[in-house]
Image (tube, rainbow, N blue to C red; front, side, top):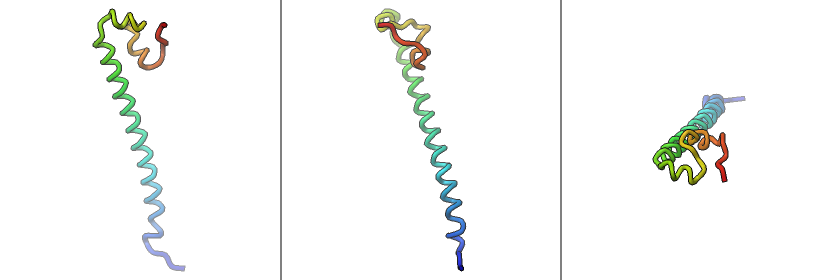
Length: 74
């Protein structure tokens, strides 16, 4: 039975590439969620208190609302 270096080492390389790809995708998704959260918080902080009150949100509740920890009042 003969084997060359490519057939011996390629599966290990492929396994590592798959792991790195999954790690990269997870990090990319986390970064996108973080940036989206920051953008939402910044946008809500730019609104004046009257507009926030109209949507049922106090300024102190902005971060909790973006994180989904509180429900907006009807």
